[in-house]
Amino acid sequence: MRGMKQIVAILLGLAVWPALASAQTGGDSSRNVGIVTTLTGNATVARVSLANPQPLRFKDDVFLRDRISTAEQSVVRVLLGGKALVTVRELSTLTVTEATGRSVVDLSSGKIAMGVLRQRMRPGEVIEIRTPNAIAAIRGTVLVVELIPEPGGSSGAPHYTTKVHVLHGLVEVSDPKNPGAPPAQVGAMESWSRTGSDPSTLAPLSRTAAEQVFVGLHAAPQIAEGPSEFIQSVTAREQAKAIAVAEFLAPGTGGAGAGGDGGAPSTPQTGASTPGIADAPVIPSLASASAPPAAGGGSAPARFTFSGQTVTQPGSFYSLSRGLTDSPAGPIIEATNSRLSIGQNVMEVSGGATFSSTGATALLSLDPSTLTAASLLSLSGGARFTLVDSLLRDQGGVLALQSDFLRLSVGSTFVGSGASALVDLVGSNAGGGGLLSVSGGAVMDLVNASAPLLSLTRSAALATGSSLADLSGGASVRLGQLASLTASRLTIQGHGLSLSGGATMTVAGDLFRIANGSTLTIANGALLSLSGGSSLTVGGALINFIGTGNTLSISNNLCGNGCTMIGNLPVFVPAGVAVNQAINLANPILNLTGNTLNIVAGSAAIVVTGGAQVKQGP
Image 1: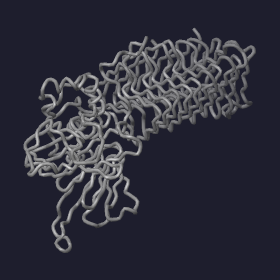
Image 2: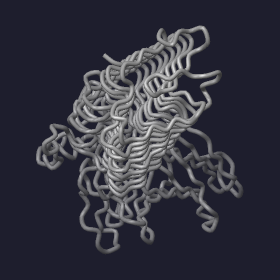
Image 3: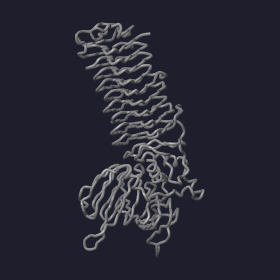
Image 4: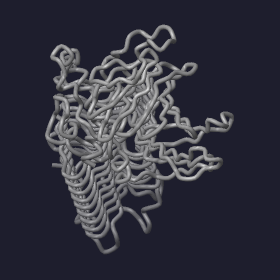
């Protein structure tokens, strides 16, 4: 994917520069609509005002109805209106025209690639690429269009095959001879093809095939070689945005920095390698490397900022793999009044990759927004993840996760040292599988963090579809506190904490703190369930009630043949096992007076089997 990352960086790296075209007034052929940003080899332009085609040169203006043709081994890039970058490969011909409310690129032969920045498009604005048998309507995407001559054809008429390859976003392809027919929807990493007037086909576009699509579209950006006054017009901020946009739109899973193939512009870069950030149909605002830190925080601006936007992403939003490293100094996402719909994980780190956040702010910040995803973070394959603040801070939003908030597996490591809760929900309404799943020898170390793993405040509500925390397969977790509720509700369908398969957890302080009229409800599970040689050590209380009016409710049918009461809690151990060998409780519940402990008859608060052990207290 290194090659694809570089290609997309070159294709889009210039597309965020300020518009260089003059004000678009009038409708004649003298209107400037773009500028040549790259020219490798030879190309000509046929213009209404010119008697004969003339050689095209670097930095030439492009006017309405200009016809650009490239010679062999030649590539031209044209920036159109500051919002679309068109790359024209060798032996290709296109004409820049207009229709009602639409900018049009007519491709009469060859291949072109186009990157369009949606946030620079006006409401309702569309750019079209037209061939004899297809119209591709674009509102913000990365695509390649090919027009291939085919032998034959009735009555000696030219016979063409049009191919539309979409790397990012969504493109509508329609039939120019049947404008009333519904257009075909071509999504990211899909290819549409049509020969003549035959029915079209739609097929997946593999990453290998996507790289092949760009063959012949390579060229070094000449902006780095232009006059000094022209280079100076491109500020460091815009260059940083260019690289970030290229990384965001690259449909791969990582690669080298977003430089070009042999002649990339001199743009700021932040490390030897760049994470892959999955494509999404909405391009967010992007912080530049030169922007000042946030006030009082010591962190850089967010890498992706959404405001009042709707984002739909079929895969993971952010992915880092293949041993790559990313060390952001600011958040990955900041979203305000937005809707984020992510088909897989918000963040995914795997394959020995290392992610290290150094910013003193939440990595994912929603205020308020709606988030739908499989999980917030997935670590696997020996990945290492460190941060010094929250993973997620949500204020007044809605979260709907299909799986656990955090998933660690296959030897991955998570280290946190912040003063804020790892998952901080303020007035939020959230639901998901569970909060935490750790397996396959994975390690989570929050012992240096002074805040709980989960914090619910200001009438926040979280409902899980499984155990809140599930450790198995030799997993190891160390933390200061599991969960804190303040005037909020936590409803767990399953166990509060489940350990199995030799998993271990050490909690320096209290397991749960329930304050200011909060409610913790555990249905169809126990507060603690340990098996398979697992062990739990809690230095503080299992439940610490703060203030009055709080409620803990537990309901299940786990007492079986009977439970033993220890410190107001019914506990179950198998027959023949001494309770004091499996469970050692000093003072499991603090400040019960003025609060409610509701354990349904026949329900167990603690279940310990298979040689597991629980120790609570100093």
